[in-house]
Length: 314
Image (cartoon, rainbow, N blue to C red; front, side):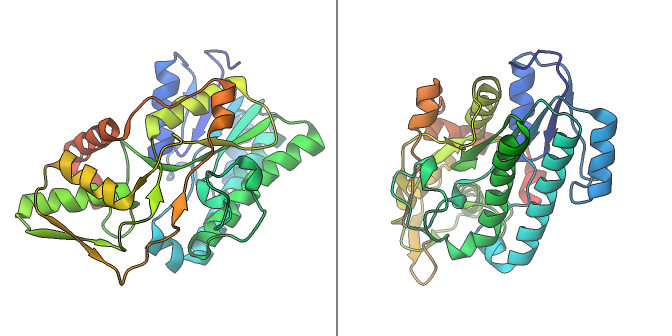
């Protein structure tokens, strides 16, 4: 168990996941959380990372920093996504190990699982068949981070764990028109359509793919729970175990935002993977389940979007 005054470093504390982890740690009474902005510490620079760890010597590390993006960003900048994520995570994990970090938790993404993985996807299906091509670069980087933690455990007896979240949403999300994920993108689109009085909104694909969504504060709660209650080489899936179609999701977002126009579908656009549901029985067995239902979570996210107009610009 982490002591309440243990020195805890949250990498990526300005992102959606990192900021949620900081909120959760503070909520649970942890008092010695250290963070660095990208300007203060570039995690892609090995010299900077080594210096930081040698000076600060954090006892626990939550590695939530990553270069992320939606379908478009992922498929257009494959080399950048692979390099930045690979370098960043190797620097942090290696420096944590060199400086005697007691425990590290690595955050991945459900896109690490094979394109045609069994549904729902168990942790054990990792590397059993080929990856989805559109985000292969990101997935390979994340698999490498997870494996590096596993290999350090095997070779040096460290206690480094990893968690693989499903699609996340919530406060501090990215609402950029081109570089955001499906749920925040829909919140922005329907909000703008409502404001401008647009008669219809056109969404990509045919609305048939099934997706699972986890509210980011629920993920943060699981991250702290695992840091205190789980050790093992296999990753732990983070999700709700529930899914809905993109069509159902768009209707739900439109309802929450209060958009009453027509929803059209551009079937010339890609659908992405038909189904992506995580098997969450492992987390359940450990004693954890999610708390926030989707409609409640979307309401909280929309409130966050409205209260932070600058966030829509980035």
